[in-house]
Image 1 (cartoon, rainbow, N blue to C red):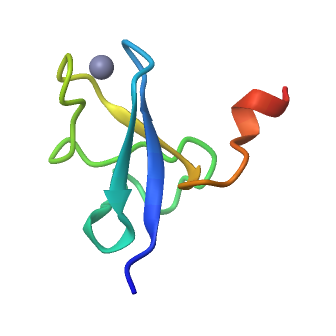
Image 2 (tube, protein in one colour; image 1 turned 45 degrees about the vertical axis):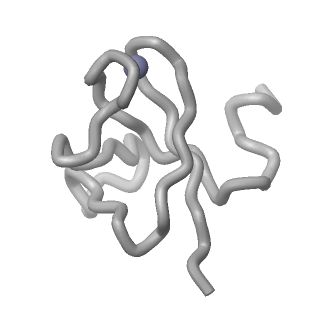
Length: 64
Ligand SMILES: [Zn+2]
């Protein structure tokens, strides 16, 4: 069973669902930013993605 994670583009705001096993964080030490590696970019504009949370969960940014 492959859990999907929700990631959001920093430039255009489009969210993408990426399989958990394919996600590579830019800097695993920096847990605050959760930037994804530039191997994984927005399919819409090529911008950098930020990990939001598990797909289907209520994302943190919507609660603010
Ligand atoms: Zn984008």
